Amino acid sequence: MLDTTPGAAVTQVLSDLNAALAKADPAAAAALFETDGYWRDLASLTWNIKTMEGQAEIAAMLAAQLAQIRPRGFTITPAEMAEDAGSFQQAWIDFETETGRGHGHIRIRDGKIWTLLTTLKELKGHEEHKGSSRPMGVVHGVERGRKTWAETRAEETAQLGYDTQPEVVIIGGGQGGIALGARLRQLGVPAIIVEKNERPGDSWRKRYKSLCLHDPVWYDHLPYIPFPANWPVFAPKDKIGDWLEMYTRVMELNYWSSTTATSARYDGVRKEWEVHVTRDGKDIVLRPKQLVLATGMSAKANWPKFPGQDVFRGEQQHSSTHPGPDAYGGRKVVVIGSNNSAHDICAALWEAGADVTMVQRSSTHIVRSEPLMRHGLGSLYSEEAVAAGVTTDKADLIFASIPYRLLPAFQKPIYDTIKAEDAGFYAALEKAGFLLDWGDDGTGLFMKYLRRGSGYYIDVGASQLIIDGKIRLKAGSDVDHLTETAVVLKDGTELPADLVVYATGYGSMNGWAADLISQEVADRVGKCWGLGSDTTKDPGPWEGEQRNMWKPTAQEGLWFHGGNLHQSRHYSQFLALQLKARQAGIPTPVYGMGAVHHLR
Image (tube, rainbow, N blue to C red; front, side):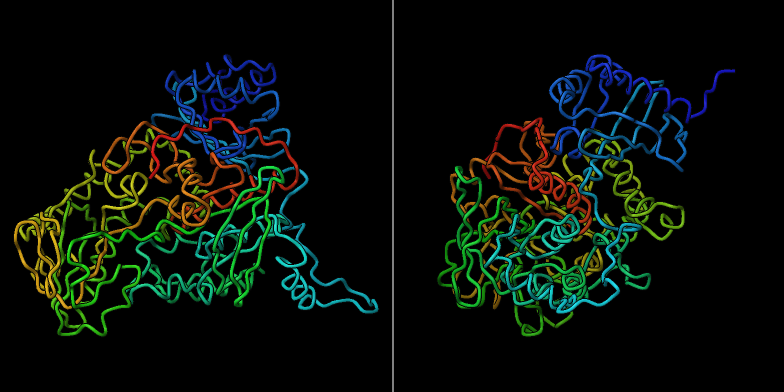
């Protein structure tokens, strides 16, 4: 009798895929996909972060890569079962290549592959020493003059960057740099993290007083050491800072705090960087093969320029430098902007007794935290998900398995549900004059984040203050100029102010490349972030992946790493493996390097 179970269906497709790959027949392999099927690869076949859309793109990738990569052995992951998800079957899969082992996910409809995710899990001969292969730590016995762990670690710390050179220098010691540093440490790649602040975690501690994570704990774990079971759902900034500081010590990272990178230059002959840093008042030259800018999405502040800023007698701050509300009780504050930071800062100022006005220059997407957690993240990142067997790694890969071209269709129903459920809340906001949007195509918060990294607020209380008139709102007009005592809008409104806070966001990460290396290199690399969706602040053409993030760029040896805690955790794995392969001399034929369409 014919076996029609999900396992049989997936096994048959994988068997056919293995046969086509063994015959080096790209057309036959591509024909196993739907006409507009998707193959998303995270560094396993393409040595890139790349999505192939449609049979022609899939065949072209295989034609270019098969001979060197030799993917094979696609099978359902042991101890996992294929599932019937209604309109499609799905399964976790394993495979290998000539130099690595991979893991992924497959969806099949009517016998054809709809989506295939392949990810590089480890490099053959360069596996992490964990589990049964973990290091012994202490070798029992006696030996004259042997060094303790502390002495060996101190020696490494004293020598790296002085007597010996790191393979990788990471500029930026926030969660991104720390997560990547931990991955590289486990792969045996010497790396130095350069951070201008005094302590690990200061990039959180030094932000405004009320800052906290708006993402839940299950979404925010770092590699190797998850938060404990009693960690709060939404952690305050100082607690995150302390965790990051602890993490750098426990994971034995070479973390150069109070160190400023002043310049960098790539030597194309020697295939290495010359990175100048200032540490302990001295200029030190580091010569890594690879340079990673992990300065983050929220590091290159956008300071707007308005006439009269030079005559304004009060204080002016960017949200990134705002110290908190304590000094501003009873004073008039104008906050320019209406996204996450603006709302958080306005709410904290109101709590401190300030007379605060928010200037909303363009529409903003608002979603309350509770329905967002329930409808948007709950199936993957929640206590219920954990109880159902959805580990953090599984959740990351489930999310990664949805190609960005399809993701809006998955997201829109979530926000349609939230809009209907919270109709009264949104009506009250609009009655207060707030300009709302749901993204250009109604797909809500996460697509806005992926496309532009801005334009939204996860409501944890400030919206009700706007509804109640406790936070004053001036919407629909931009700033015209400042006087000695006020902000004047283009519609003529004058807002008296003792303090102006510019919650005006951040620029593209390649701005750091311009500052550190050169404008020429920044322009060669082009804009970071965004999908090319041809929506607001994310100009086309379609890229299909985040521009320049976690993958090779147009500048040899230059990489970008950033994003939220989830992305820092997830994508650090694939960036670290790409860097390890280069250190180990493993061939890394990169497929699908896109053209640069936008400079900033």
